[in-house]
Length: 361
View 1: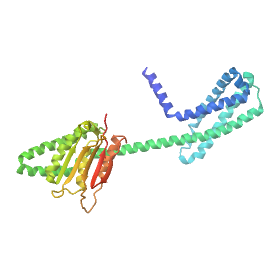
View 2: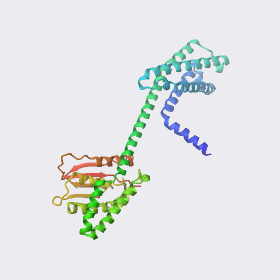
View 3: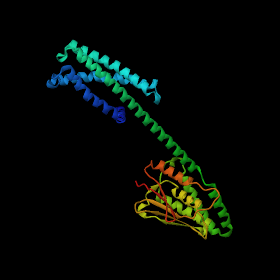
């Protein structure tokens, strides 16, 4: 039973993938069979139901035989001339193949119709010549259509390979990001911890607890089985609160992070570590000091998106920073959301604003 369903599914899939091919074939048969029947039997083909049905079935049999023979032979042509610049060679060979097969089967069918006197058919040289010339034109048209189908299939194959390469590249980028634990951030945390141990042991204990929460979350989302998973906004917010505590311990009053998350959107999903990437991006590109504090707001919008914005106070550095972190986040979204979500980035009213889509399932 499973084998039978497997065959049916395979056949249905073949029909879906080649539906354009079968649509064109059906259209050609609907035009060719009545024209051929009228040429052989004249007005009797349409006036006599027996001739209409019987003649159409016989003509259909020969047409399908020609189609199968042409199809079998035509598949060998791309193996001989596979390159895109060999179109003329392919069309010429296809045309020659179709002419030989079609004219041969026409001759056999006319000979059988005449010999068996099917529906009163009598061989007429003029009609036979006209049909042969029509087949020459039809063979040339079919050769051209075959080349078009071949070019279309090549284009689809190239597009699929390009998408596969793009997908693989994005996966590689995601894997690189996931394997990275920012050593600079870890060094700063340990340095802050060493100072707190002597100056404020109670705060140091809290700091260690929050730091463990941060790295526990990092290990969870970086697990191999989480390669393409999303996380809920709720879990991301829990993590970012611990991360904010570490930042505030490090920068003190130089940074202010405000969370405005509506409960109705807390079940929305997003790429893991997205908020951390945006916080790090803001700190990397802006001055963070007590005199000019960096103010970052993370909030949900009325449309169910997530918006992260900060005041712009760009750092003056000898070598400009790139947007590798933000670009990587966009790539991760493209991979995880299968291009369904787009990150919007803009500068407006002295603020740098990033809007992230949330997925609701």
